[in-house]
Amino acid sequence: MRKPETARNAERGRTMEIVTVDDAIEAMRQGTEVADATVQRLSYGLQYGEFHLPDPVDRERLACLRDRLSALKAARRPAPKPSGPSRTRVCSRCGCEVSASLAMTSSSGTVCPDCYDDASL
Ligand SMILES: [Zn+2]
Image (cartoon, rainbow, N blue to C red; front, top):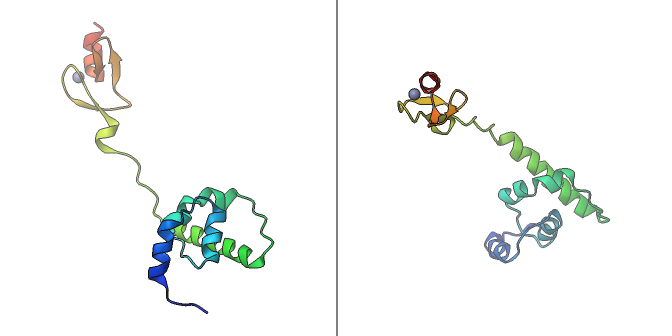
């Protein structure tokens, strides 16, 4: 039977730190809710860890954690590629912005292709 004891669990969750998948299963044994963030943090262990769980109920708990992990992954949008200021360099001669892939290093610092020609004359 499921009892509404969310508030008490939140308090207990603060005292018990979930570091490993085993901890998470132990927390579930005690009726503590495992947060989404925790499931994500345990992602590696859940995917690649091998667990010897003699208790079928524990195996169900593990399966439940793995299900939640895949659900969380499916919900997460792919991260946008880094763009903008971090991908540009400022030319030390003319001050223009060039993309990092075009920036060149000369004796006077990072320069754009135009200035690099001047600098190497
Ligand atoms: Zn320049």
